[in-house]
Image (tube, rainbow, N blue to C red; front, side, top):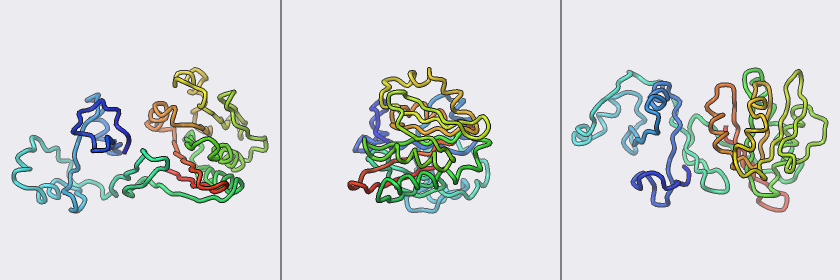
Length: 256
């Protein structure tokens, strides 16, 4: 759920001018959208409060005759996989809010000092080490100034076995650190960029290679780039929101 830019018909917006964007994982639907070349608007297939449908009959038996007459075409692919419903996340708040839990996971951790924030980053990167060979692991960090993004980045470096001092690359935009073999950790700060093209000119294609780890502070400034990366098979984007709760206390939300 995101804030609408007001470029769609008003009927598709909620009363608070938000809009729900669904990102399907079903190959046929993805191909349909690709061939059509535009977004597709849709209502839920199931009646509110009824079971999640996995075949056409599950839908038809829970809607009225009048509603059935509104359907012009049915594409029946048979019994669908018994997958959980999609995860629904509200992105309009300072902190990501889970509206409905599905196959995508959102979990939060409370840290009470900089050391715990750093340890959280170290533990998280270790859970993805098995994916290094086939993916570029990208940590998209969001949070206000002083929230602890750089401390979290230091923790990721700790988990990767990097002994160099990690500092914010605010004025350099990008800092790189050597990992095993030819792979690298790239630490990016987008605070000073005004256009996404500024970052693309720094050689992003080389940074986002399988085996590399990329940390991006102020990631909300380059959502276009990150959304394109999310569609690549060799990229794994992990969204991190760090919220300041007290002088040292932080809430770290992870969306994978």
